[in-house]
Length: 356
Image 1: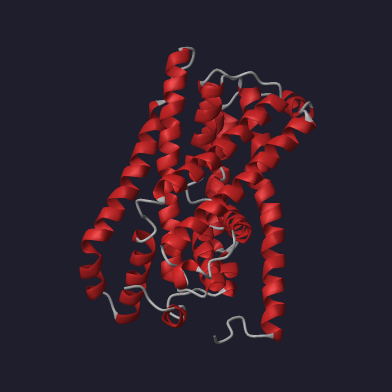
Image 2: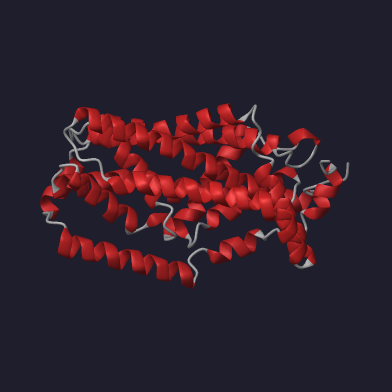
């Protein structure tokens, strides 16, 4: 039986981090260490592995077609709306906030929360943004943090399933074209990520109740809510549209990378574009801020493997990262500050959660 709305509000007091605590983790010592590690690895690759000329790289960057670059950025940010629609479906399916998800925010609001979460992931260690998203959804829907965080995990599982489908599609495309070597590690990594997530869900379903009884009171309660939010996000009737929305989001990311390559007048096959864009996404799961160091080095090496010159690969990755990382830091950071200022002002004039 689902919880009442008032019960979920009361549960929100347990396990929910404060915004101040989340902000305090940005640029903390672990984050600075992670940035340093990423910088060292990237610096080593630039110095000892890649053979390039700064002048040629800069010439490639200066020659970019501005209109196509802006189109790439626009398509990238359009993907957030589709992700917001999907998250709303997931949250309503999980009955976040009670009343059949009546209190779940709209798709645009959720898209904004996703952008702020990606901002946090881009500047903080260990994917802090995922926890922030769970906190923000709980705050907006008057729910508990563990259940809301469970919907983020459910979304991640669906993301990896969509990425696996598209990676396999890209591998088939490249095999048919026959002009590029398919790097097996990308396909293997996609399989491993999906397998680990599915195995985690199965373990959660089979051992959840026993595990919760072994945990201390409040921690056990938080785990039960997290398990409920995660597993109840999956319902047979709504999974297909959720998967489709996720695939559309990733196709828009692929389109971003395609138009960046087109803007720089770099000719590569669409299969390579698909592979590179999805490999980029998987590399961002490495827990440095925004995958810093690993994305730049790994994606550059992958593009060189596909036949681009070192200068072309470095130029392309540098320009693409201005959209997929630096713009997220800028626009997500602005939204983060504005959103919290508005919430703080609202809290000073009226209670955020008036009694019903």
